[in-house]
Image 1: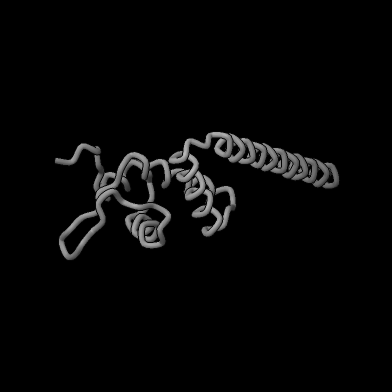
Image 2: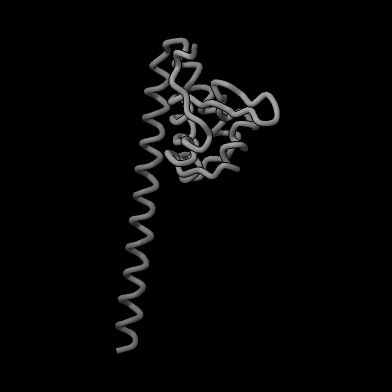
Length: 127
């Protein structure tokens, strides 16, 4: 009897928004490890709720520009820290991530300001 709640691929795809192909890619490349792996034709992988976290984290880090190999390393480190009870590293990772995200937002704000200033200058020149 399976005591761990599991989800099938189609449920993971629906919840996370990743494509079936991306889910297979992440599984085959070892970013996520299904609770039950497919063993042959007709068999299905079963994923856990922890896999949902890994997939969402992968998507978030990918969206802000992290490389595949770095994301895989970060997810591996987080799993290791959770298993070993080393919460200090998790806090450091989260803090670094938040600083990076804040820096990205500042850069985006500066770019948007520059675009607006250029638009205003162009409008003034046309008058």
